[in-house]
Length: 625
Image (tube, rainbow, N blue to C red; front, side, top):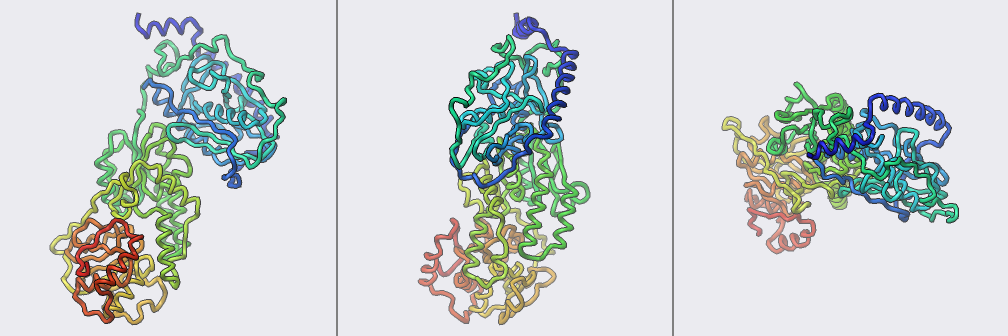
């Protein structure tokens, strides 16, 4: 006798679920749900998130595995359960409940629905594990119940499962089943407490914290064995799963139904086009993967958004969000906190819009850095592996560099004008610590992440002979006049050497910044007449013009923060310092300095003092070394 027939005969010993029985069950639940809805009108409102108990001592912790089944037929439902937990803990994590305030599972979570992103998971019903929207949330209610018991809280409402699933908390009587909305879990504490919930390391982790010890009377404290445990006569028989039971005669059987998708997809969520990342995505995507881009259609032909979407099963766009961002940025200030806040606001909107592509069957995400902290903070990356397409230094490192630059140039009007909110900095740092790989062509950024870095080659421009610039001896500063771009350092070096500079962009450090420095505007072809390009930036994310200059054979002097350490013809400064910069310019141009920048010993002494900030870079092409 084969296994399928044996299973069929075993199940036939019990009454199979019928469509009529299911309809009757649904009618009864509607009656109970309506009754509970009316009674809930006068109950306590939902709890709110807070920060006052973040550092409070821990009362209890529950840690349970997200997956316990090795049967691959169960994989889609396990993935659905994880997706449901991922959504539900957004409503739980960070809650701070006041003393004597009742916590209600359903009041806090709300009704699970497809519209909210809930997927099909396993639910125990009528002796079977059936697929249902929101299935699997009992793992969260079990964990909350266990923590409430361990913390000594008053259990107001709790229901045991009707049947024991092997390996579950029900085997030990530590379970608390929930069913929207009338089978609830409710408890309260005599002291304020905080709930923290997360998915990490393949486990659901729930913690309760409180600043004071909960006062309980041990004689009145709920004892597990005295709680009502109403189970069927088949309570200790292992329930069958509709995904793998083999009972084809049951109307709920999943095995005979075609499945729209399989578990294990990758989703790529991107923003501004980078050719290096586009090539990486093209080389790693697989059939069935999804990509989310800012805009589609004719707008996607613009250089800013021209991602290659061929070969993807799903392509998602955020046209309205992107058009709104474009409009707002045109009317935003040219520089400063207002502009940065506008950018971050729209990064958040774009992240939320593209997050809809993170369906239950997406197990891996490749995400551009600007979207990362928002997706992390809202739990979309929980229980998923992910790689980050890094376009700039991390916020905490970036702000550290700005602070150092501002200490050197306190007169700057731009170096201290904006710092991101701490929660955003923390979210990005935590996400980067959890990322599987950091992908970037920027050597300075790659050096921050060690073996996790995947260093891509910069995309070198293909400069046709007809478009090559006219040779010359001019010195180009290819940026707006900003402290973070090294404007103070290039100005001081120009004074030392008596140089004339070709200046691009706006003068944002205030009028008269270049007073006493001979300057001129660039030609129509920006590199015409240029013999040297200099950018001693503290921060530089997209050194495209430097790459173009190097491709044209024009020498480039750049800081390590420009990320061009492996490009031929580029001299990387060991530190952003005007005297070192002047020395390098002298070595290339052979200029006679008005003020001698540094002799050999001074150069080495200064290099030693600045070495604490050096980012594993090399200096080449200098007569001073």
